[in-house]
Length: 71
Image (cartoon, rainbow, N blue to C red; front, top):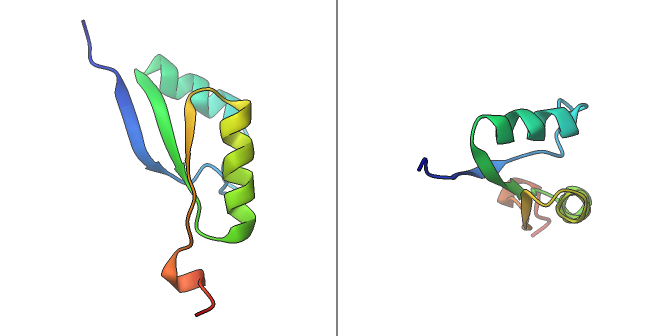
C-alpha cells in the first residue's frame, strides 16, 4: 500500500492559487492526502483558517513571519 503524502508547508492563500479546488484535486490525485497551509500575516491567517474549514485536506498552521511582525 502506498504511503499517504503530506505537503508540510504550502502558502495556499497566495494569489497564484485562483483555482484552489483544482489544485487540491490534482494534489489528491498525486497521492497528497494532507496539505499544511501556513500563514505569514494576520490577514492571511484568517484565510488559512477559512481554507481549513472549507477543505478537509487542508490543515492550518497559523503564525506570523518575523518579516511581517511589528515588533
